[in-house]
Length: 120
Image (tube, helix red, strand yellow):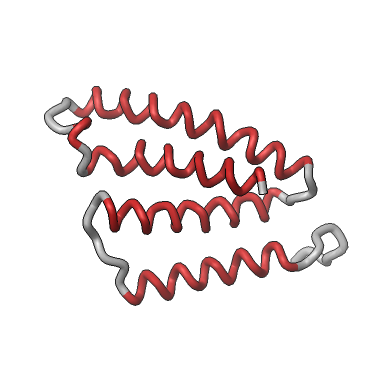
């Protein structure tokens, strides 16, 4: 649970760093170099949360694949909320289906014990 919470918080910072500059007033009127530096500053906090999330998850039995797939799913969930609240974009049916397929991938990645499986 701690891993998922840290991954979620880190993704909030990363979404702000990557996409906040599209609409947030904080970034308006700034030259690109300043926006990049501001985004790096925000991304620093993402790394401060992502690294312990991955380390803790891995030390508690998550595989690298499981961590990455869970992180991507959380990224999409955070982005859906951000796109709706900040960018004013609606979730269209094809995006919702794509998101559901990613959720299915997360289930497949985490529902089975790793280690004893035969690699492809």
